Image 1 (cartoon, one colour):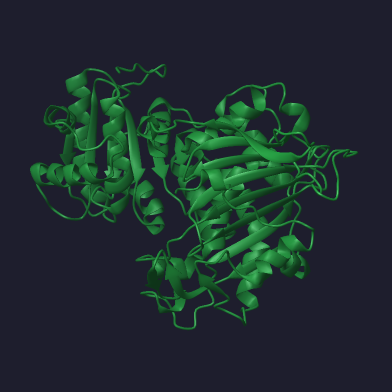
Image 2: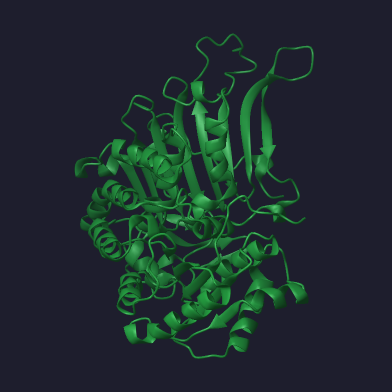
Length: 507
C-alpha cells in the first residue's frame, strides 16, 4: 500500500558518523530503507556514510545491502527497490577527531544544495561511542559545516553521560554549539508502538482518567527483563552496569509516560515539560535508604533454553572479581497529588527467565467484596497490563463469572492485540524516531533537563553501590527471575513481581 506522510519533510541529508558500525547496520539503515519503501522520505534525500575505513561507494552499498537483508522488517529488498534507494547513498571516509577531515562533508552538502535548488535539512547522526559526541560537535563547528538552527539537527545515542557531572558537561558542550531545538537525544524505547499508545490510552479515553491516580491504583510495576547476557559488550558493561544502562533512561522514561499529568497539547516541549515534572516530583533516595529502596544482583552460570551459559565474571573483558550489577530493582515514589503513596517498582536484568517488557498497574480491591467464599477464595484484583515485547498488547484483567450453576469467578482478559499475525506492518522504533527527526518533531526525544533530572535521581544509588561493594555476588543463576533481595524488596509490601501473562507467552 502506498503511504503518504502527513508530516511535510524538506529535502534531507543524513550524515552518519559510524556509518559502518553495528548500530548503522542493524537499526539505522534498515529504518531508512523502510521509510523509503513506504514513501515517508522526501523525494530529494542523500545518505552520507562515514567511518575511518576507506572504501568505495559500491563496496559500502554492498555491505549495507547485506545488513538490510538480515535486519529489515520488510525482508530482503527487491532488486529495483534497492537500486532506487541505494542511488541516494555515498561514502566518505574521515577521521572524526580531525576537523580538517570534515571539509569534504561541506563540499558534498553544497553539491546537493545546488542539485536540489532548495535548502535541505541536515541531520548529523552520532552512531559512535559516547566519548566522540563532543568531538564531532566541535569539529562540525570548526569545519564550518551547515548549522542553521531551523534546518540542522544532531542526533546522539545513549548513554548520555556516565553520571550526572558528565551528562551536564556533555549538555554544556552541545548547547554551546547547537540550540536545544537542534539536539535529538534518542532513546529507542520511546519510539516503540505500544509506548506511544500509552498516551493515547490515557488521554483520548474518558474512562481512563478517573482511574489513573492514587484513589484507584495500588501500585505500578515496570519490568524489562532479558535472557541474553552481556555478550561482546563486557568492556562497556563493566563501566556501566544495568542501573546506568537501563533504568536511568529506558525505565525512567516509561515511568514518566505512566505518571505524567495531561499536557495542554501535543507540542514537544509541552509533553516534555510534563515528563520533567514527574522526575522533579520523585522522592529522593538518601544513602541510608538505599538498601531498603533498591536491590542489585549479578548472574552466575546456568542453563538458558537447553544451553549452558557462563556467569558474568567469566564473560569476555569482565573482571573476575567484578562488582558490576547485571540486575537492578528500585522502589520509587512520585510525591504529588495524583500519585502520593503509590509505589512504583522498577526492575531490569540480564540472564533472566524471559525476555519481556511489561508495565502493570494493579488496581485496589473493591471496597466490599460479596464474592468471597471458602471454595472460591478472594477474587483477584484488576490489572492493566501493557506488553511492549515480545508481543505488543494492552490487556485489562477483570473478574467474570465462570459459566455454570454456581457463582464462581475467574480472571478474564480483555485484550487489544496490536497486529495479530501481521506484526511486520508495525514500524520499528527507529523508523518512528528518524521520521520525527526529519520533520523536526522532538516530542519523543529527551531534553537536557530530563536527562539531568534522571541522573540526579539514581546518583545516590550509584554512589552507594560503588562505595559499598556487594559481598554476595554472583547472587542469582541464569534462567532465574533474579536475586532473593529483589523479591524481598516488593514482598515486604505484600506484593510480588508480575511476569508475562501466560496467554502472552510464546508457545
